[in-house]
Image (cartoon, rainbow, N blue to C red; front, side):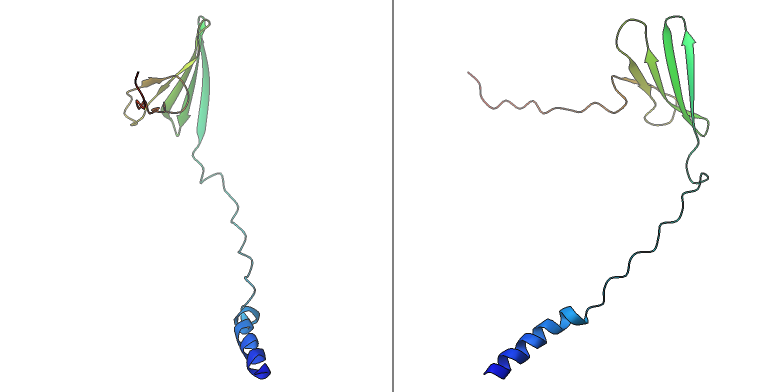
Amino acid sequence: MRSLIISLSLLLAYPAVAADVADTPPPMPAESSEDQPKADIRVIQRGDVTMTEYRINGHLYQIKVQPAVGPEYYLVDPNGRGNFVRQSGPTENIAVPRWVLFRW
């Protein structure tokens, strides 16, 4: 009986001992500047308004408008066609659920 228990425990422990230690993954290749899109930021001052244009590879995709009075806003080209849409922040507006749970 004892030999059966010992042999079963050795048999069950064998896969854990026989498993190879995982090799460390190869190092990541160094990022080259050729892979990254070239960003160009231009600041334009017109009267009391400061406009910051953001371009990638010469394509204008976002304009940040900072008026002297009032909050800043962004003009974003969502489709890349030159039609800019006004947003209150650099990211899209989040739709908050407005479910009615209770009414009195």
